[in-house]
Amino acid sequence: MLGATATPAERRAKFRELLAGDQIVQFPGAINPINAQIIEQTGFEGVYISGGAFSAAMGLPDIGLTTLTEVADHGRNIAGVTNLPTFIDADTGWGEAMNVARTIQVFEDAGISGMHLEDQVNPKRCGHLDGKEVVTAAEMSKRIKAAVKGRRDENFVISARTDSRAGEGLDAAIDRAKAYVDAGADLIFPEAMRDLSEFEKFASSVDVPILANMTEFGKSELFTTEQLANVGVKVVIYPVTTLRLAMGAIKSGLQTIRDQGTQVDLLEGMQTRADLYDTIDYAAYNDFDAAVFNFSQEGHQ
Image (cartoon, rainbow, N blue to C red; front, side):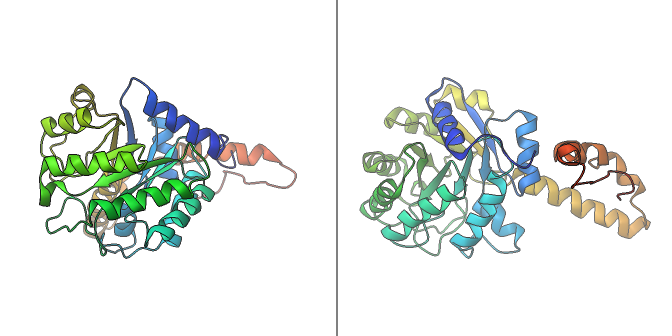
């Protein structure tokens, strides 16, 4: 009630614990705070906060148009209601090395547990689109070193994402990843792998855990957690899955209402009032201080 009970420090320590554990962990993307609450209640290990999903929810393409302030506020709202570690998309860090250092501190202050930086140039592109350009490995290493130096909580996870597979090939991408680990990255995010063997080669080539991005309609096949675990993947994210589920249902539902003039046929697929109130812990707010807060559930539509 009234948000997460675990502190940001506790959630960051939990993220570290998950990375050091023996099991693969799943971080579905949350498009808003109640989405994060449902992720936690469903039993997942963490919450991912996607830049692509956030920009899409704002009606914008994923090309670096959102600002640090906007993303941090979005992340703060999500982190504030879940006890799970939150892992956020930091794009290219919103500037040069000193900007990256500030970015990590802003996210720490927002209660986030970790973030990933990518080696694309600005303006960036979605990781599963063609035509991406990357900075030099040396430039990206500067970004990572700045993040490490700017970090105040040593448990805040810094992940390095490389988008170089498409343009430079697998071996060059692995060489970049090794350089990023040397610069201080805690986790490697190889974007747009083509098959399981590429994930396996990455996992066996670097000394830190690796992450798999299981986004729909992209370059990678949608592998199961068992398949990914078998080739050495530690973290799986599903960045835009909940947005696509929601928007698909909304679009279909609105068309039904337009065609039929009523939502009666849609009720079975909706979250019920009782489930909504349970998800947001409505009763606990009502009981918190009945003399001051009297949020009766009766009569609300």
